[in-house]
Length: 268
Image (cartoon, rainbow, N blue to C red; front, side, top):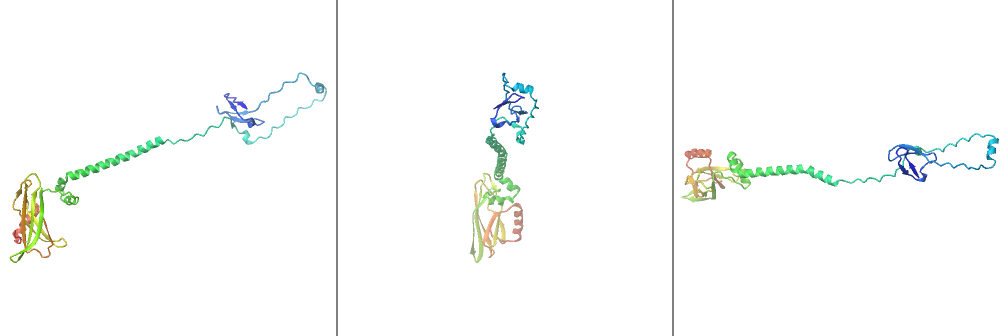
């Protein structure tokens, strides 16, 4: 069955059982207007030849009142509601825009990657500077020398190396002596002054029992030159277990000079 919208003239194809006897409110899918659609039955043309007796009965007989039109059957509320007559639209499939999602994910993670790269670069630069400038750092903060030594990167500000270090006890003319031997090497390419040496006898717990100092045989070493030393201590402490040897700094050299003037225990 074909019905036409009176507002925009759009034709709509509907099933034959779609229309109610009294018509049906419908909504046009084209202009969205609502109108009452009904089925129009064309009137049959009157017969030119009247039936016998009809005209006479009508003219001579009693005029009957016209019959009241039959009341239209009750319509459901759903019939009064406007109906859409256009075919239903196919459901729209939702597609996931994976390309944009992936692009947004990459964009959001890019700043974090850049920050991590900058932090890693800064840490690498800091470590490089700490290694390359360890000598000036130790010179400005001597306490950092132990940290570098613990990291297997000892800092030698003097340019002198103590090696071949040994110590032993022996008896001479009935006297007990401690002998400490070793070598001093200039590890730089320039002449270096040789400071006094500091010797310390320690017990099993590491406590210092006796300390003395001694000057090396030469006050300066040429580049790459090595100087051996051999020092003795008379009547070393019986509780001594090991000996420590290192160079004296300026303050310790002044204190050692005063100590040597006060006693003559070390032999040579």
